[in-house]
Length: 144
Image (cartoon, rainbow, N blue to C red; front, side, top):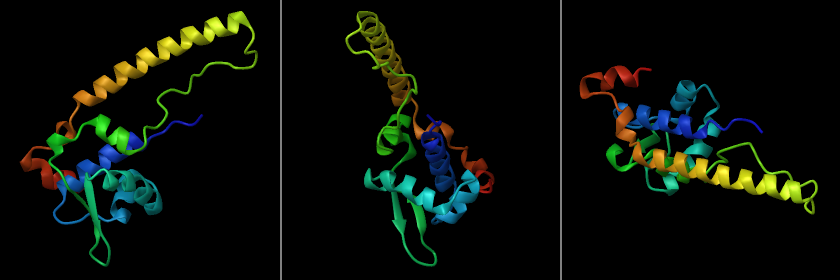
């Protein structure tokens, strides 16, 4: 399973959107994130549906932050991205009747659920505002 970078990318994008005056286009964000503008729009759609960003179409269109950065947590962004798979480790189901496989899968399920719970609790404690530059640095942050 490939690594999923959407959470880190969208938090990065939100910080850049906040640091700019006016709207930030998908093309501008694509440059910052080193990806394609179409992928930016797809990732931003969940954030728009959650009410964290607004988009405008047209020549001067783009994205703006719709809420206070102190009101958004990393968990909120994770959930807006439809909760990407946290871990690539999984239980084996080759021999569902095997007692050893069942015991191993049970232990893995418990450990993975505990680890996921810990990660999600941590994400709920980190606000988007944590990554916002000081007001004096906002212009510099918007440049890159």
